[in-house]
Image (tube, rainbow, N blue to C red):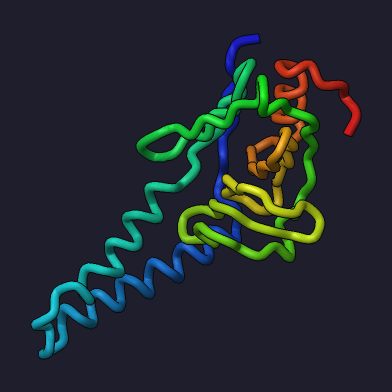
Length: 169
């Protein structure tokens, strides 16, 4: 099977968090730019740098290949192998699986939900999520990955097909 691409659409919560946070950052920068005490330039630039850096981590989509999941970002692709030592053990759609999770490191909603998270249900996991209501859990040897493709069932089917996993789970 050739590589199969899956879109990563934005969910409502991501849109809301991103719009409100962006407006806040732009308001802070504008406030510093208009203030009479604008001798310091870093307070003006810092919110804009935060927006730019977070935007880089936006997930544009996922590509399922025979030996890895490719997470397409704005300027690069993150390769998550599932062959060899990182053997894929299971994949299943599980909507809202991130609910109740604690972010350990990463971005909690400014243009993406990415980074390391922990929950009672999943333990420690790495997220590459744009819509927390369309989540898919991939369990590999030694780690767990959560993604949010446009069609979780199609994504699961494609991963199972290329990896040879049974249709259970």
